[in-house]
Image (cartoon, rainbow, N blue to C red; front, side, top):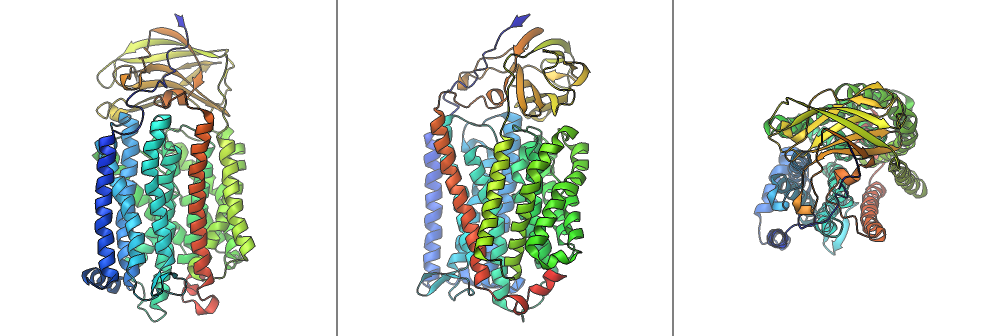
Amino acid sequence: MTHSRPDIAVLAQGSEGGGAELSQVFGLSAVALAVTAVLLWIGYLHRQHKISWLNNFAEWLGRKFHRPAWVALPIAIFVSAIICALFGFIWDVSLHIGKGRDPGPLANPAHYFIIIGLFFVFIAGCTAIVLPFDKPGPAAVRITDKWYAPVGGIVMAGCGMYALIGFPLDDVWHRIFGQDVTLWGPTHLMMIGGAGFSTIAAAYLEVEGKRAVGADAPRDGIGLKFIQYLAFAGVLIGLSVYQIEFDFGVPQFRQVFQPMLIAAAASVALVAARIFLGRGAAIIAAVVAIGLRGIIAFMVAPLLDAPVNWFPLYLGPALVVELVALTPLLKKPVLFGMVSGLGIATVGLWLESLWIDTIYPYPWPSSIWPEALAMAVPVAILAGGCGGMIGMVLTGRKLPGRAISVGLVVLTVLAIGGATANGLRYSVPQNETATFALTETQGPGPGRFVTADVRFTPPDAISDDPNWVSVLAWQGGLSNERGQFIDHLDRVGPGHYVSTKPMPVSGQWKTLLRVHDGTTLTAVPIYLAGDPGIGAKEVPAEAQFTRPFVSEITILQRERSPDIPASLWIIGCLIVLVCTLAMIAGISWGGGRINNNEPTGSENELQPSAQA
């Protein structure tokens, strides 16, 4: 029996752990510049009235959907682009879980969908800016003496630009810090956030267009109504992508994050949908989101043979919003949103937990509820208030005073920041070990498989009701059970656990014991394939061994460099934070500008539908 700290200072930096090859960086940059130059030239020709085909096509779409040309074409581009990016994103995460890192941006097919999707989100916003020759409504922003752009187009282009900036910054980040194989890497969050929040910009643009055609416009048909529900399903999905690691069963952060993230997304999207689209809209938006996520999940898992991803249904929170909307609170949108947020963070989360506990790889134990509610309730109440304000912007009702509106957004950001800071707290046992006895067994595929008998020292190292004690094996290659394996160990005594199915311990697999107990988040490596590309040696799965508990991040994110000063990391995170706050400020500015320059009350043709 060995008792050693294995060579899992596996953060050694090597040639494959940093950024992409310069040839790929230059190639992508050249292609992006060429495409951008062509699009700028087309825009210039359009503004100079030297081409007519762009405007003719946009006008044709506008007649089909009863919207101005500067709304119809950008929204058509946006819907296609955001679905493309979503598919690429989920496929990309599944590839990293099943196969590990890729040699570069051009070696991963999912990256093409992400890059193209985000690029055309930006292009959709720019198209809305370029198209109009006349002033597109009273909220429009003057660019030159005779050129005005819709607010939604400007905000959409800004969100798209924010997401696109994440790509070069991501490469720089990897060159400095190594590859952080997690969804929650700061530059990854830029790409995710830009795409997610751009859906709100699309809602702004749609409302500007509807008001521009006036009350005498033909009634919206079924197709356009579906697109409106799809827009709020998009907002719901866009705000849900932060949960994807939980959806795939590889969460790298404490479990209390998941309820908070679900409550926040539901409070913003479903409250705004109910206010804007009327009775039943929250449930319909949730159902449309289920359909879209379900189609993409089917394409990624069964069709592409990648790891399975589940997703929240949001039907419980949607039901809560619809019930609260039956009360007089609906006439006071901000208060309605905050009360709905409270209901979502309590009853809604309990209803959602029935699905989570049935289908997710990591169900919610009863022990997480006190801390999870302490995080989710204030965030959901404030996020619901913001959802109420978005609904007011979209229906033309006057927002509260500037101090109240801005204060609510600021408080929401601070509440999310505070809850996030709390969720990021975790501890690693300092003098505790796990002793493994492995038994050879037949597995479902090729390679070596074992079962494990695990004993903790001391036996009371964790509580009797931990969040999870499980074995995760991942990045084994898509030909091996889709490259992912999860086994929740059975407790047979104090500090004594046994596996329930054969685990892979050979080939390219990375197999580890994971323990999450309150604020404890720790792991023990069982088998880690050698990785010459980053200078990491193999950690063998011997028949018997004792190893100490270590921080999970040292195993799950092997490619990260351990030698970078903490101050440099903080500076990098602060740069990303500033960019993120700028995006949030831009979205808030857009909503305020539309609200301050649009008719209110009885003058607004959207008001009756909101009261339905």
